[in-house]
Image 1: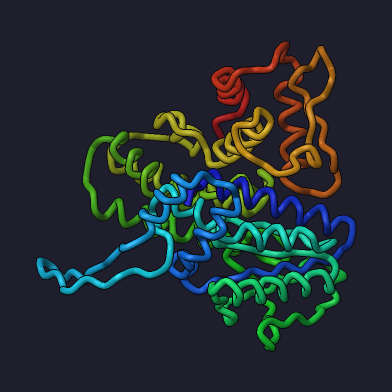
Image 2: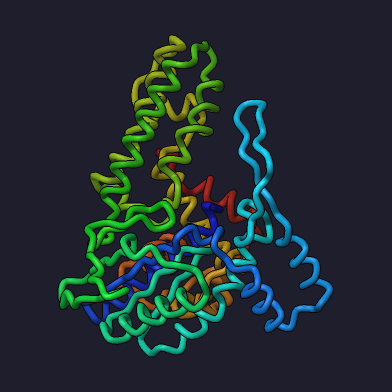
Length: 382
């Protein structure tokens, strides 16, 4: 899973949640789980759908050959079981074409869901979620997904279908799938991010920090060196990804307890590095300066601003971006942004004021390297 694409999908859905909650004070989100989705795609159905797209026959023939006569064998050490077994369904995972073929396969479902008024859809490969403030619209969507899954031989794991209830005025309306009630949960994993009803990401941050500290201690136990740069390489490779995955989505306010907690792994590791290398220091900021590192707060803020920059210039896809932000028409401030919904406390309402403060004296729209330099020079290391 690409962290950048996952972050874009999550920023979109979480921003939409907050926007709907600001208007309706109630929102229900249903997460679907297809049983072994990539392995269950029916080849005949898929080829038929490819043909309905008007794809040239030679490409369809190539894809048919690509999917046909695939086999697998069981290997244990040097032993390979025989005979090999055929693979009658599914799209190859790890291939370039696999996710695209799966999206083609479910495209008709997404189009049908889009026709239901007041129902919102978010799809990332085989991860599909429906959300709405209208219980009737959401139940219609659930029924449609269930019916489509049965008609297309792509079974749902009903026991893994999850319901997240959001908002202070949530009516706790019951939803059913396959004749059974869908259980509401107090958190759900969405593209690797733990989502809670209050959308504060406390559980995700606590888990990420705990894993990062554990990984840090394992690295310090496993490697011995007098080179600070070697330890920094280990930290950036094996620890930072744990605490920075999709941080643009959940970045807490700089002065909050959660922001302080996210700083803990780097505080711990930087202290241990300098102690092990017999290098004196006087503070956390001094350690960062000596090691040429930036605080987690700096890195998160920079990541958020770069993410927004890529959305503005079209380097990252974001559906209906114009409903959240637009460029100002000011000739004196060519990089100034206008937040369409400044009071809904989402990614855009949080980051745009910082963006505008940083770019207020910029005379022209900056290219990527110029924008990156602007951030490095204007965001404090600590």
